[in-house]
Image 1 (tube, rainbow, N blue to C red):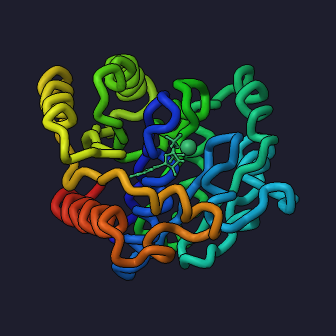
Image 2: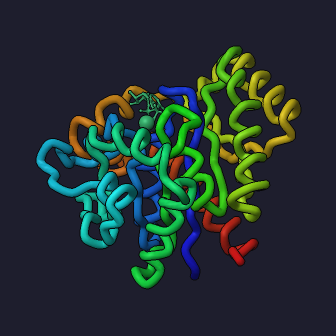
Length: 260
Ligand code: ADP
Ligand code: MG
């Protein structure tokens, strides 16, 4: 299998991008796939939630993107088994540094290409909550984008803007980028409201809905403090199970439509 690179993006914060990256990473690893997660948020929540204290790191994704360091020199293996290209707060400077640099949209794509021989089946990119340089660079490196969405009335107001950015990326930097769909997160299946919002969004923007929705469960709040994904801390939790099913569906999709 070739590498499938997916960007997990939504410029809204708190929609479970980072949780989705960690949980899908763990689920794909359980399925026997070799997985690399890339933390692209200067807040370094993904890095922290996988048991690594960003303050202990000398090298991070910042050095790869702005100084051309070989990503293999920075990647660490997490306790859950997936590999991580970690972030630190220094990444906040990368956004500014890159703004004036030629080829800035391609810095992540180049890093991913440098990893071609590492044999990753999946590279998941955890985007920051903005449509800035790092998100555009992630979309430029990706074959697909997955959009986590909290099904509340106003949560989809940013989706149009995100899709405009996807459109621009397709036009200028990455023709093959596909929207893999929206993933309903923090889903409260007891309300009809959530399902209605979801239907409206998929109809309004003509987007696929990736199944199953991820239920809201308190266990997600507990996992990061343990430095493990929810799949390890609460193996049979319904949220963990939902992510396993989503992972299996993504594998089916990647197999059905192999990348070029
Ligand atoms: P983002 O990366 O989009 O900002 P996070 O993944 O950091 O979002 O999630 C935001 C918060 O929501 C975190 O505190 C996380 O633990 C919590 N969370 C994520 N998914 C769920 C869920 N399915 N049920 C309950 N809480 C969740
Ligand atoms: Mg995040």
